[in-house]
Length: 117
Image (cartoon, rainbow, N blue to C red; front, side, top):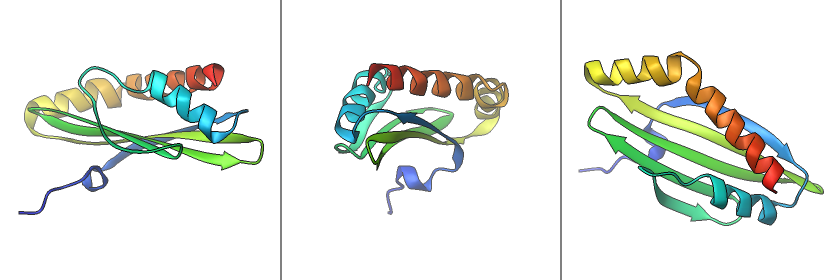
């Protein structure tokens, strides 16, 4: 039996934020702000990538934070991947993704990370 990884989940959206600090300082901000209840760290490659995954009976999801060095600063990217199953999954997708609430929350989190860094 082959275990699926977060990369097997459909891409929902990706957002990016430029920060005026080197990648190692952006990494510190991501570590302070990214983890949340219900999510577990499944991969960490400081200061480049942090993968958080979670699941519910009707969904499986991952948040992938990538930090790209850019001269004197860096770019933090947040990628959401998720699959939704059944009626509850469709309802969750409609409420969280379809309304734009998730998009707004991720963008707000990236802005906060940029301000922290």
